[in-house]
Length: 62
Image (cartoon, rainbow, N blue to C red):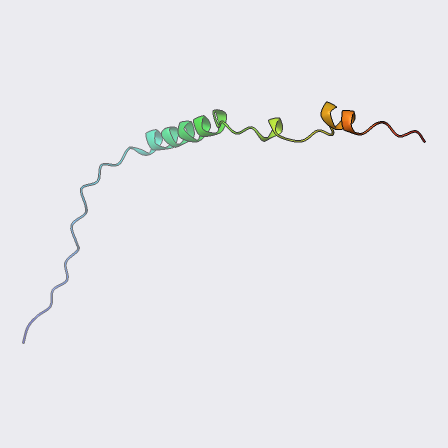
């Protein structure tokens, strides 16, 4: 009769940063991504009709 022996698998050799540096790196990465993101929606919001619209539509008299 064969005996089955279980042994833990060896851990992979992955280099991990220490926790404080990993947290600091994650913070700076998120900060730079948000601070220097090229899309600024407030520059694209429509604020009402412009001069071309006003030129095509004469003012109404009430």
